[in-house]
Structure formats: structure tokens, C-alpha cells
Image (tube, rainbow, N blue to C red; front, side, top):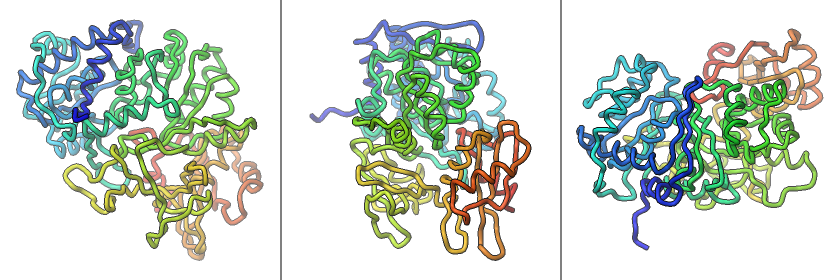
Length: 508
């Protein structure tokens, strides 16, 4: 009962108990690599030994700048095994932002894909940069098998991720072995993602984004087959991989799910193997949930944050209602809290609000995989006596089901009353002519703020009918001052709508 909870146990378990389950890597072309946990485990211990041999010490940050491929998955296991801290760099950031983050983390070694090497021009780690390809393979081949991993405490850092920096400089979040170990168990619960050895998991969520929601660790621990789609996979490639590999589990942001659905409808690609399409990053529309489930694909939603390792909730309903509409509405909520965590909603005066589905406040979360500080102690105001102040405004109903109403910075205060940008966006997305939508506040001389809608249409060039139909769905005083039609919404490095850019563009 005193054994340390170490993330590195998962690879050994997969190697011992599921040695012949496959890891499949696509390269964006016709080449497909297939090997198994037996070979994977051997390469991981050699890579860990090689890292120690070239000077990586316990606690050092080893960064990756890589697409979703098998070598990146090997680094997920080998870096912590060597006693170091895996730091996944976001390849969608600029070279300047990457230089800041790598410097802030004091990365000692970086492993990078050759086509991303130019993003590291301003970074000079002490142990240099190893490119995936021949140099990486030589490193693995030269590494002595790591017979005796360094002593590690379960509270040592295993992974370091940075926030997307939408409200300032990115902040580092350190994940301990213990926290990720418990997070992984929660991911495999039957009422959670339910990942098991019978699954074939396709990693569409980038491995550099909050540990790809922690799913690589869960799949390895369970012994599930894992499929890596390679660099910037298109929806056509994702659909083809699902059909070819008989994928059972995949996660993605709603915008990708919309495009994938359109592709499947047009081509008839067989996605019947999917037992779980998990959406995260933003709230999906009811129409998207309904359309996938009409095709026989169960849809779930997870909510979390980089600061929560990242998963906090899941929408699997153990007692689903018979009414399809109510089922879809429950899936559109953010779901119920995973065991091990605690939460509360607090108003502006710090008073905890009841779970009645109506009272709203800022959501606070705490638990064994929730950060209690940022790396190097930045922004201490985000933490309150062990609670993470999420910045999300939410309600919780009597059954413990969460609904995110808005971000505190995205709420619109008009004439002393609050307008939820999220609710207004969902009302817009219910329109058949609207493919995507975002709502931000613009200054108003009388009402302080008013909403403006930025909409991606499905071909219409006239916003008037969209506004007319919206008036039937929302209170009159919620109606946007204007609807701007655009070809596409700007996205952050993790695929969320970049409201900071929209505010700068439309609400200077």
C-alpha cells in the first residue's frame, strides 16, 4: 500500500500483458508502420538509456516538437522513464512564442520533426536538437537498455504543458506521476472514456495539446491498439483510417467533427466500428450530436483544462432517457464530474451557489490531478486554498450535471444584465444556414456592451434571414447589433475560436 504511483509502469504492463497489440503509424502517404507493444517497450527502454547516456538528468526538461507519430508516442514513455520531464511544444505557435516557452521551461534537449526545425531558430538548448528520422533512430540504437531507472518520487514532475496564452503569456502546468496515474485510471472508468484492451484508439487530438487529453497514457495502460495519423491529417485521411483500422475510439474538436461528418455523408465511408466519438474544446451543436448518432455513432463530450491534466467531466449517461432530444441535450452539457475531483460554483461575492441548474457562478475545481500553482509560481490569483479558479461561468443541476454558461472574460454585460455568448452562439448554430459562429461584445454608448455575431454561412450572402430566425430563439434584448459573414473563424493553436483576435478586429 506504500508503492509509488509512477506513470512509467504503464509501458511495462502493456509489454508484458499485451505484447502483440499493434501500434500503427501513418506518414501522410502510402507508408504505414506496424509494430507491437513488445517492440515498443524495447525501444522505449533503449531510448531512455540513450537519453541518460547523452546527459539528460532527472528533472531535466526534454521537449518535443512533433506531429502525431510513433516516435512521439515513444518519447511519451521514455522521457519520464529516464527521470526527466516531457515538455510537449505546440507546433502551431510562432517561432517567437516557442522560443519564449522553451526558454521559460529551460529545456535542455529538444526532439523535433525535420519539417518543424525552422520553428526552433531562436532556441538553443544545452544538449541540442535531435531530429526525428535517422538521428533519432541512431539514438535509439545506441542506447543501452535502461536497467535501473533513477529513483523517482510519485510527486516528481513527469510532464510539462503550457496553456495556449489566449489571455497573456502562456503559463506552464506541471503534471506529477501521481496525478497522471490517477487521471489515467479515471479515463478508463466504465462511466468515462471506458478505454480497454479491446479498443483501437485513433489519436486525432494533437499529442502536444494537454497530453492529447491523456488518452495515450490510458490506451497504453489498458493495452489498446493505437493508431497515429501522422502530420496534419485531412478529414479524408481520418475517415479512411477509421474504416481501414476499424477504429473504435476517436476524439476531436467539434469543427473537425463537422467536416468529418460532411465527408462521410458524401463518400459513404464506413465508420460503423466507432463506439465513441468524443468531442472537446468547445460545446458542439445539437445538430452535430444528432447527425452523428443518426449514423449509429455514439457521441460524448468531455470538459477540462490544461490545468486539470486535462479531464474533469464526461457525458456518458448510465440511465439515458428514451427521448432522443433529451439525450442529445444531456450530451451537449459538459457532463458529470469524474471520481476523485470536487467542484463548486461561487458568485462575485465568494458565496457558494446551489446545485439547481439555474444559479450560476465561477467554477472552482480541486483534486489530485488539478494544478495548485503554475510552473515557477506565476498568476497565483488563479488559485484559492487548493481550488483552481477556472474562469468558466457555470451551473450545476441537482444530478450534478455541469453546463458551462460562458467564460468570465466572454460574458456580455448589456444594460446591467448578462448575455451569454455561448448560449447565443448555440442559438445561431441551430440555424441550417450557419456552419460556425462566434459572439463577442462591442462597446455601446447607452448599454455599455452589445453582442456582435461573426458567422460562417453555408452559402448564403444575406444575414437578414439568419437574424429573423434568431429572433424566434432568443430574448429580444439578446439580439446582436450586427451579423458579420466571414469565410472562416480564426482559431487558436489548440483549435478554439480565437475571440481575442475577433475582439481586436471587431470591437477595438
